[in-house]
Image 1 (cartoon, rainbow, N blue to C red):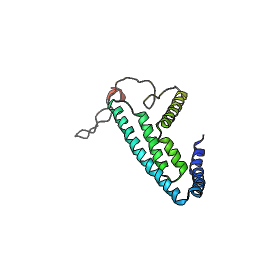
Image 2: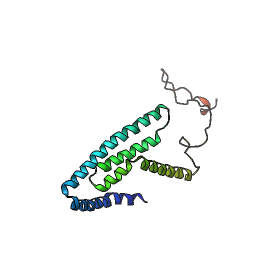
Image 3: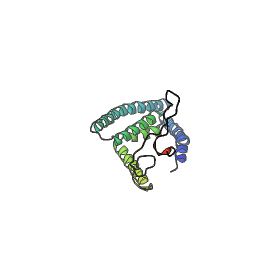
Image 4: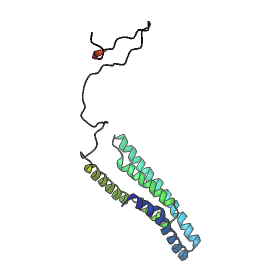
Length: 170
């Protein structure tokens, strides 16, 4: 799905859906209960994010201590940040989406899908696989060099002759 369409749905469609759900829920259970339910989901979500976030942080520290990159933990931390933003945003739809991101199996499925997409794009790149380092990305050429920076004039103001084969032949 194009990024522009996703942003359009997120910034225009989601608030409209939230308003419709608020109206439906408010008409069934009342305004006070609706507001209370929104606050309750935000409080419960915050507590769950704190607990799961500390767990992910601990696993990331353990992996870094073993000199392993904590890729999955960084992804899970990102999901928890998004879940927190969704749970703190007033609304039942955003609370449901944030609640889904709090479930480890959901984060596992998302991680596998993102990892697979990254692998597909990396394999489709010319040359396949990861890029080689370096600006030219070509073979390394070994050689010797000589510093040909002009020397400053001597105390008598005379400029020394050039070094190497660059000067006039004598």
